[in-house]
Every structure is written in C-alpha cells, then in structure tokens.
Length: 119
Image (cartoon, rainbow, N blue to C red; front, side, top):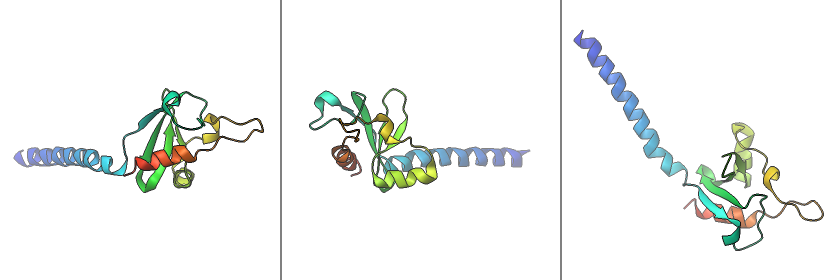
C-alpha cells in the first residue's frame, strides 16, 4: 500500500512539475500582447477595427489578435509560414482596410511594432 501512495505522489509531483515548467518556459517564448488603439497610433491605420492586439511569438512571428473575438491573424512572413502547419491563424485580409483600388493597407508599421515586442 505504501508503494502505491509513493507512486501516486510521484505522479502528482511530476504533473505539477510539468505544469510549472510550461508556465516558466512559455513567457520566454512569447511576449504579452500589446493593445494598439487607432487614435493613439502614429501612422496609417490598416485595420477595420479601432483596436487590435499585437503579439510577438517565438521565431519573431508577429500576429494580430482581434480584441473581442480573440481570433489570431498572421502579419509577417514568419507567422504566415507557421500558419501553413499550425492552421491556427485566419487570413489577415479579413480584418484589413482597403484603399479605393481594393489594395490592402500596408502592415509594415504594425509588423515593426510587433517585432519590438520580441525583445
């Protein structure tokens, strides 16, 4: 009986250590999302919504997160490449404004802002 209790406690201890390691490692892999608001943004606002969250994930994957639905959109090439295998990002064109000719607004400023979160 004491052997079973020891094994059970060991299993619990391993589980707790695994969970703790996830929380300790994850912050190093991804920066916290940063809320960007149209009125405070210095530049041409590219999104349909007046606010968006920008986040940098591992390998400098810059994504936009819809603030109310939490849907994720790949902004840079690193994120778009990862999206091919992860299937977790929606097409960014869904949330972009377009000009009179139907061209999507430029994302360069947002991508650069997102890369600053990688540091």
